[in-house]
Length: 76
Image (cartoon, rainbow, N blue to C red; front, side, top):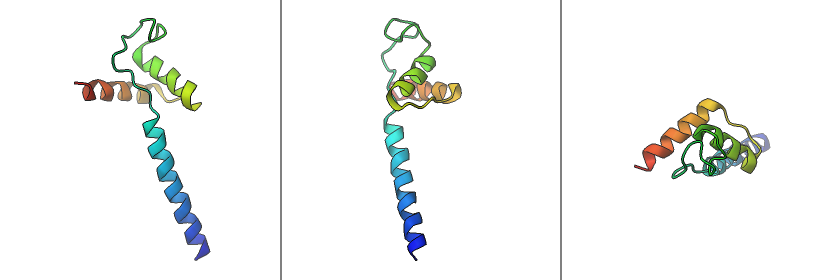
């Protein structure tokens, strides 16, 4: 029984960690690609860099591209 309780607690903590990570994605809305505000990077590159600076995690180029697209769609 104790084993299942520990597994349940770990599962809940993992879910909360995923939710916190999803909320920690920086926004690139309103930033122009290759501008000084984007540190002269593409929006996907800037998003990858910003995620690393804030969370110490590199996301893939594909993930960054998808996030940029979803932010552009959400902004319309």
